[in-house]
Length: 185
Ligand SMILES: Cc1cc2nc3c(=O)[nH]c(=O)nc-3n(C[C@H](O)[C@H](O)[C@H](O)COP(=O)(O)O)c2cc1C
Image (cartoon, rainbow, N blue to C red; front, side, top):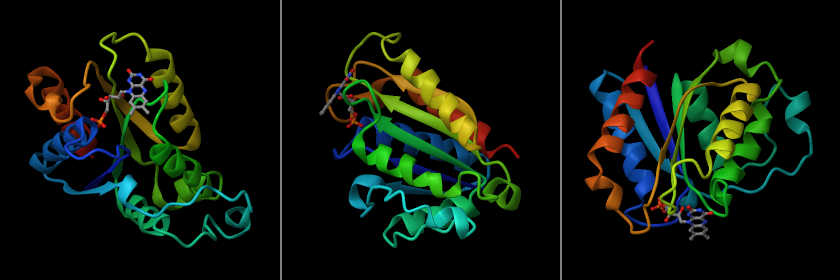
């Protein structure tokens, strides 16, 4: 059992990354191998819409760090995408990652490697927990449509300062639980 996390914040001591790490701790406690990748520190180009993947069994022709990620997802049983909310959406780093998953879409990936479990984790500055709910639901529906099984969407509000989520016991507990759930076969 392997659970991998991808995080889309450019900040050090990022609240998003803290939550994803906590989820991975939960997965680790439940017996999973874990790994985390910071998308901001990786070289990931935008999808070039060349459609090479559609005639090459999901292989992406853009040979950048996304190739590492494709392999990680292929080998994992579950993965987490964590992103801060920027302008009511995921960050550009997380969106590049998401667009590039197009390579796995309708190319036999699911049949070959199984339906991967997934969780989404968001951190936002605004304290209103309902504010971006529509976007979170929409994103969950999109990933389900892409062929993943999104079992949880966690959002944490009012995180303006790096690292402050660490003191929010309840949300940290929820993150840990998500990891445990992802690690269940
Ligand atoms: C460019 C930019 C855009 C942002 N847009 C929003 C937004 O639309 N809504 C919101 O609640 N917070 C917004 N924020 C605040 C972040 O979502 C918030 O600080 C978040 O907790 C950062 O996560 P991190 O600590 O993982 O980087 C924005 C921050 C930046 C830098």
